[in-house]
Length: 67
Length: 483
Image (cartoon, rainbow over all chains, first blue to last red; front, side):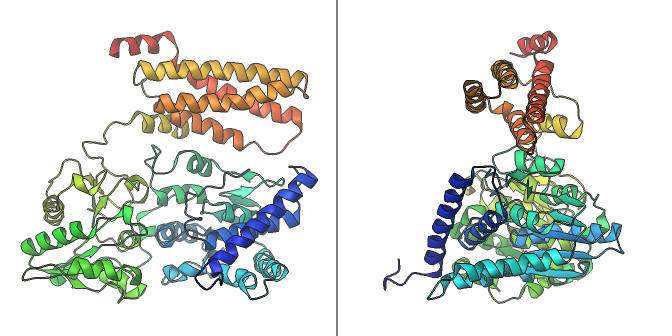
């Protein structure tokens, strides 16, 4: 957090990234790994968009190996 | 066929995509060609006339509701849907993803529902990574600084897009004018890069500038972006009668392109201006450090040279300046320099890169070349161990086939991957083979268990075939002789 305890946009995004990951993990536990519905897809896309805003997460070689 | 190309990487990759877009337009002149890039790098498409519509992925706009005082996840999701729906509404028949990131694969999946053809990373219906075409599988398995690939990124992009590049595809921008550049007599130096590991330090650049000014009577000009201003100021502050002119942070991309086109030579590390030089065909002297693979992102302009070094201590400023002047006078100087004979042709390796067993193995596995001779006994030993692991895994796959609930067999199959990692760490020469095998396994999509088992078995059998080739008695005898 910054000196004034005001989160920077990056810090806020990091926080949401953690939240979205937690939500995805919860959904996977609930539905099983093979359940990948539209909402989960959108969440994953949002998660990756957030990562893209954070430094060095989306270079060409950050290959999409997460299965 | 209405086509969308996704290029969500940075400046350098966007410029390296230009010839591919030109080739797509040349081969399909009547088809609409759209391009999606990140809004941050929109300027890198200025002057790209072959594209009919340019889409921007404005991440900040989608994410802005999340950084408001009262963060709104639903609003962010709505904005995200707006973007994907707009792209989906275009009903692209062909979607070509030239970025190799998780984001791009998810986005490709979302917007290619109507597409007949999808190339590049996407997703299977169960959400797992899908690699539909062989060139993208090659990229996944074999491309990167720690690998043995020697294919240039632009050529790889062309393979993914399924086009063959011609010299004219590089000529999207007005070309370097040799006569004009001789008259102007300018050598450009780009002192920056996207990371400091990709270029020389301030003291080294100072030495290069000083030595160059002592031997070159023309102008020496520093170029670069706003963020590189401090470094450039430090480089420019050298003692002596002459100093380099400093234009860093003072040029738009358009002006930078014009400067590069009119220069005699550009000296730099791995960076966007080097890729721009390829498009305008201005020769480059590229100092390539360990953090990059010049094979993949080096200059393509005719007559360019690359000096590959592990770190900057391995090369003196005098050597760099001597090679720059040798390049301009068309004489050979450093035998380790890699030469770019023509823009649309492979590099000519320097004396240190001539033999690479791993690269020859890649050519055999992917490009139909002959299998190279085994490099020695350790490689064959590694293959023997690999063969044992494959045999063990195949036995366990049979066990799963007979009893799909067999958890022990499934866990042994998983363990075989760990064993392969260990073999690869002891015998790096087997790396290309193991990475190829792994990627082929990833490419197996969701299917009924029986088909899944068959497809998995098939990949293991292919690996076994390559191992068997090397472990024939003749090869073993060859290895004995050379050991």
